[in-house]
Image (cartoon, rainbow over all chains, first blue to last red):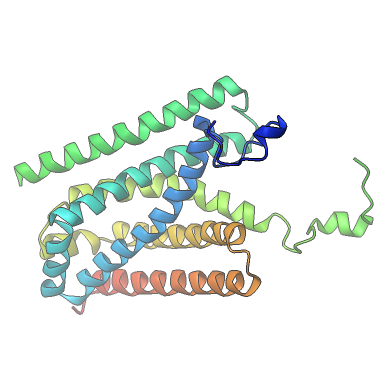
Length: 138
Length: 128
């Protein structure tokens, strides 16, 4: 709780939990991450659109797009998109349970939060593992 | 909590924004639809990882894959435009900036979805 404000501590008043002086609890971090991954997934839709348009345009366009997508920066973007999709998917299901009234107890909110993080990371790892295995066989 | 609204207003249930729960509801409906569609999409992309042009077009021109892809594109772009609208409503305080950015995102989503539709149909119905 470091404060750069010189007047408030001198008067002995507690600071309100403003963003700069307040460490977000896990559930709050997961909440803003849901929003961030939603925006990232929207940006990722540009990749899907590019891929489909290239496929419809012809072999040359498709090969050019695939060249970028399988380059190191393309793979990083695709892996990030995978994690982002799985996170938003898992946490979205958590939200749907809240929408029908389940899981609001603090303990359960934290448990489901940890489950969402674990599920996003595990599913991403499994997906890319299978992907590279299939590539190896092809 | 006391309710000062008239019976008609309550029956319409549109609230101060005159939109009711429609936005919220459609966001949930598209979310539920996207759960199986996104899982299918990831499986498709993984199976096509590094596939040749011929293999990719052959897979996508199967009717079931084309139909599911159209559904996926519809659900994602719709869900994305709804979600992005809420983000902009929360963070863009300037009224015209907020309205124009929401319109821009909606138009981009429509354009993106139409580009996907066109491509999917072209791949599926041939002529390339």
